Length: 143
Image (cartoon, rainbow, N blue to C red; front, side, top):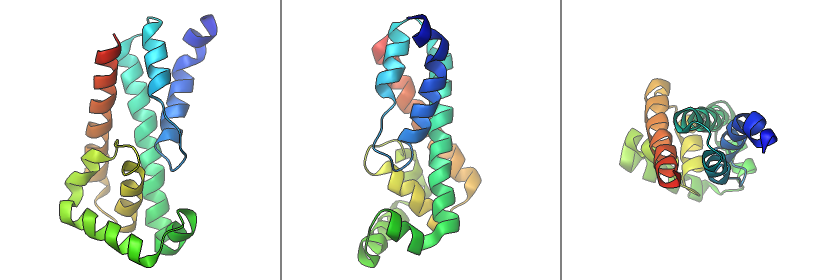
């Protein structure tokens, strides 16, 4: 129990960071476990949000600097699939970054944002709002 309380926030940050990358991981169970052990909800939500946003920034950077060829190799997608994803992104615009927290579609959205070089400040604002909202809802349901 002491281990969870002492190292749990660090583990939550790492899990939240990795969960925002293309790795198939989640951080919600760790957040809930820490909350159920009496740790501060506000602090945990902020830690999880920070880790998750930084993970999304990693995706953005991969898209920005790696471009289409790297992304196609990494996520094994065709030109046509990537083009369709870009069209969907363009249809909804930057506001789609509010959905960066959604499983399955959120991580590729942040990669596409980098490829399309959307404004970084707007990216950070929208991604942070979406992810903060998600963690806040999870925390509210858990306590």
